[in-house]
Length: 172
Image 1 (cartoon, rainbow, N blue to C red):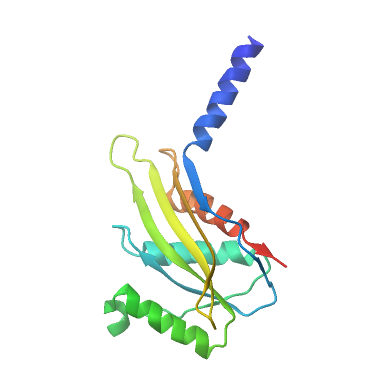
Image 2: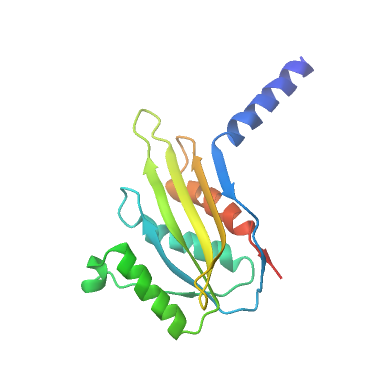
């Protein structure tokens, strides 16, 4: 009986672990005391405002590491709302330079939806990167994706993707 329980537990852990995927390297040690910022997340998903939702979770996750990043001020009205993502990111990088930030965290949302079907489980895919504002070099990049269970929320699933991504950053 004990063997069956252990085998069942092992299979359950394997099943849960197989629902989450992460790629990317550890990257360099980044200075915690530097001036940090968060730029808009590009939304490649079909869900409106998935980028803005992921930015809020990112802000929460990065703040747990003792950072107090400045967030690019986003307007939902006027011309800025109509800009394509490349124009928005160019404007955000100009803002980061004007604010004299050292590093910015930016990225994209590849998936943010409830899958269709009876269970309707949440699915989230996010890529993050840290960029040196002065040089424009990407210093760290990592992606993660997860399909949750039918009773989980999109926000909860997104936290389970974004928090481990941010936790893999190394600060000095």
